[in-house]
Amino acid sequence: MKCPRCKEDNDRVVDSRAAADGSAIRRRRECLECYLRYTTYERVEDTPLRVIKKSGERVRFDRERVLQGLMRACEKLPVSSEDLDQAAARVETRCHEEYDREVPSSVIGTLVMEELRQLDQVAYVRVASVYRELKDVSQFLDELKPILENRAGGGPGGAAGAGQEGRP
Image (tube, rainbow, N blue to C red; front, side, top):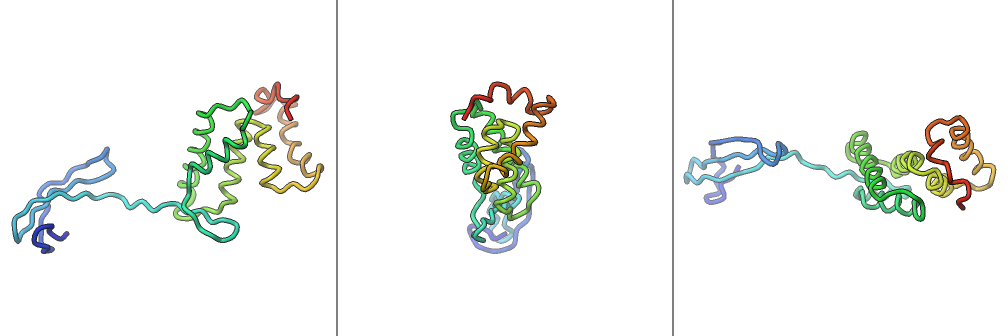
């Protein structure tokens, strides 16, 4: 570490301790040339997660974009903003856990659809129709079949779907 005063790279660590809730190490150093004491911090390098879009373009992962997509899918539906925020956080966490530097946009889309399937079936179908590029009614029915089977069997989403029959 170069001394801020004399620019020599000759120092010793006088004190070292955890800082910032353990996410950094604070070190007190003393320059052995000019005897200046100064503080440095050591942190884990945070490499931002990048999204590989269909076009091949790479952009920085933006949790806010995920949240906006969830909000758009759940527009005019009884889903709280807190639930949407938690869903966006789960998508972000899974991306960081499963991918080091780059994540395909298709993976993010799949994770968002998984979250929507749990939050609101209508929102899920809205997104699935666009995301999976459903071309005709038979493809749409294929997408709905597992949801309807779960509802009839009283499985997950059975009670959550109650009262949604009359919605567009």
